[in-house]
Amino acid sequence: MAPSLDLPKTAQTPAPRHASLTPQATALPRPQRRDVHLWELHLDQPPPDAVVLLDATERTRAQRFVHDLHRTRYIAAHAWLRRILGRYLACAPQDLEFVIGPYGKPELRAPWSAQRPAPLRFNLSHSDNRALLAVSNDVAIGVDIEAIRPDLPDATLAAGVLTAAERAELEQTPVAQRATVFFACWTRKEACMKALGLGLALEPRSLHVGMAAQRQTLQIEQAESANPPLDLSPLPGPAGFAVALAAVGGFGEVTRHHVDALSGRLN
Image (spheres, rainbow, N blue to C red):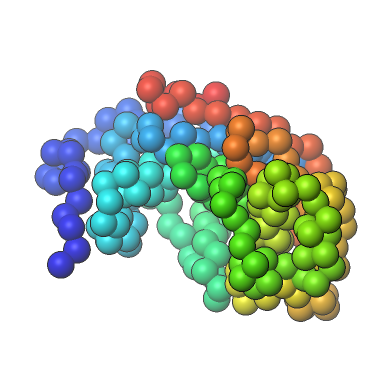
């Protein structure tokens, strides 16, 4: 039997709506053209009324976590996702609806109003106690953050996700730097797979991004031929983490935002 959620009383019984759950009077400015807003989240500090914001599917998934820490981080990530997207759309966060693509990538159900016909695109990634939420106006994007583990990669993992050329590059990397270089490479692959909405349907070891941490343009052969190239770049991240961003057809300026988790204020 799955463990029960340790829900606050406001989540167990019907509760009156208050300021954090009602539509916002002023929406956050949306990213312009092909720009990307990147939100940095601390998952050990969930927003106010976190569980109340989740839908039935999200609550069911939260219940499946065995460990309280993992459950808390999942709830925090999805509650912040809803609060931030709700601010962009000036709607109550719990009213957002999502559709899941054929390979598991969520998107906002559209259209949500006649005044905002252009889709708002997003992608969420989390690792350990950190998460990143990338938001664009109408650009298919993928973001990935990974905590760097010094014990990886082993030979089996490297062979399973790297091209032959990438493995050769990794072997030429000083041993003390291999974990950092490997995880930086892996986040770039993950960002590509997420931007295309393909997930692991795109075989990682067939996707060559190389070991050089630099912005590049990729044409993915496994994707539909009509797709424009991917714009892929590593990004600065918290100490001990690797971060990468990819966008179909290219991205413009990346601006970073954060939330004040203690007050629930978005900055």
